[in-house]
Structures are given as C-alpha cells and as structure tokens.
Image (cartoon, rainbow, N blue to C red; front, side, top):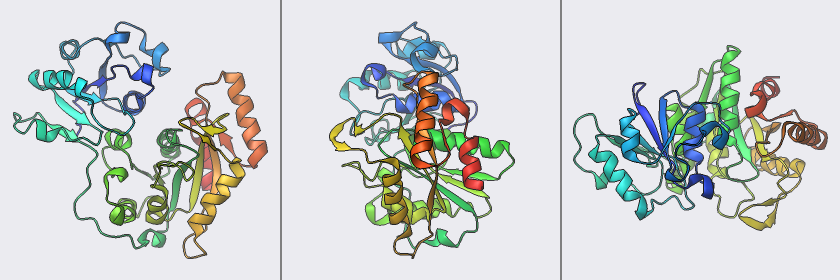
Amino acid sequence: MLRSDHRLALYMDQAFENRTGKMGLGILRYSQNTVVCMIDPTHAGEDSRFLTGIDRDCPIVATTDDAAQLGANVLVLGIAPPGGLIPAEWSPALDRAIELGMSLVNGLHDRLAPRYPQLPDGQFVWDVRCEPEGLGVGKAEARHLANRRVLMIGTDMSVGKMTAGLEMAKSARERGIETAFVATGQIGIVISGAGVALDAVRLDFASGAIEREVCQYPSSELTIIEGQGSLIHPSSSANLPLLRGSCPTHMVLCHRAGMTHLPRHPWVAVPPLTKISKLYEDLAAACGVFPQAKVAAIALNTGHLSPMEAQKAVESAHQETGLPVCDPVRSGGQVLVDAVMA
C-alpha cells in the first residue's frame, strides 16, 4: 500500500514513556519511505537521534497539523500497546489526519477502515493486521524447496527477531545472495511491502499462511522468515505455525543480553541459551518427519549496553553456546549470514 512518494508521519504520543513505539522505531530505522516527522507532544522539538538511538534525521512535532505542514501525507500508528487495540484518546488525531487529506496505516487489531468508509481517490486506510483471503491448511510443502530457510526464533517477545532478520537480509544481498524476507508481523509488512500478519490468522490456517508465503520464493537462495513470540512466553502461540509452515533448514536465536526472566512475566525464567536452542531444534525436527533444523547463530540484542559491555556480552554468549554471536544492529548481519551459509 505504500508507494515511494508517500511521506510518513509516525504517531508516537507517549510511546517513549510506555516503551510501546516498536512500529514507529522499526519504520524509522528500515523504511525506504521518507519519514517526515514523529508526532509526540511530550517530546516535541527534542533531538530524535538522542531519543531513539537511530541515526536518521526526524523532527519531533506536537500535532497532526504540524506533520501536515511539513509535507506528511500518510500517518502511521507507530505505537503497539499491549493487546493491540486503539485507545479512544487517539481518535481526534486520526480524525484530524483524515480531514487534512492524509492516509492512515494501522498495524493494530482494531480496524480503522470501517470508521472512514468514504474517502477521496488517492486517500486510503491500510489495516495491516487482517487475515488474507484464500488460505488453506498447512501441508509442509516448504520441505520440498531446495533453498536455505532461516527462521528467526527468540527467548521473548520484542527481542529483535525482525530487526535481526532485516539486517541479515541486507548483509546477504550485499554479498550477492538472492534473498527473500518473509514478514510475519505488521511492522515487517509495512517495511517490506509484503507478508502475512500471523496473529490475525485463524489457528487452523496459520501454518498454511506461512507455507504460502515461503513457497512464493522457490528460486531464492536464502529465505529469512521473521519470527514471532517465544516458546517460553505464556501468551505466545505463533511458534508451531512458523516451524511447520516454513520447514526451516536453519534457525537464529534472538536474545536480549542479560535477560534472566521475562520482563512482563518475571515468574518465567529464561533457560540457558543451549537449552532453549535444543527445545526449538527438537520441536522443529518432530521425530524426523521434518528437516533437522539447527540453531546456527545467536543474534544478541545489546541496545541497552555500552559498547564495552556489549562486546563482553557477545563473548560470553559465544563461550556459553559455542555458536557465532553478534549484535546485528551494532555490527551488521554478516556473522549470521556466514553461519547459515557455511
């Protein structure tokens, strides 16, 4: 739905206080579209590079009108609150964007298109989190593909599975490897322009939805599948459809350095990386029926650490697992690509 001439404003009101700006930050870091500004009255006028840690110029403004005056023609909901529902207090900003002729990109579960049923030509509402039409049940057809299929897995939600996958895809393409990136969440879909929002798909068709996406790229040498959730997270049900739908040949484990328990579920301890890797490997293999996928590398999220602390964390994870380890945001995805292509 996004064309190259669409100029984006990221709606981020209170996202930094609530740490819920995953959509906006992902687009700011990776989207090829021009990002005109972020909308956040609490931080209007502040330095976005300091606030986000992302090396991209992006003014922070207070209102939707400010964004329109800067030339934005698409408002993207950059916030992903728990539960994925749209708070009522956002309505005035969204209504004003429509009045100003802006289009809307919505990655949350609540749909906005019914709210604005009649729009002029060229103005649209893109509800990203919708189930595609024509889905069927999974049949593990991806096992017949001759390419390498890498599933990004994790120890928690929001530990960088999409980010690591995008960095890995970028590094692979720079090496001349024909690479496909299969987005399975709303952020990856908006960035890449294709994919399936897995958490909007009925469970019966979930593995079939992933299978259909993966099988669209039979000629790619490397297909990277964005992961969702975690096997140890109490609310995550995405891992089995991802494993069955993609029939991965390799996996990359994503982990936040120093995390010993799930932040929002502190009663859930994170197992040693070797143990959780084996858990994924055993489930992927399913008694020999499916490919014997192995965890090939660790993508370590060290964004909260100093450079020296990050290097120590990388070395510690390598010593613990014996696997190649890197933070792909700090150093790129080449280490991950090397591990998978070896």
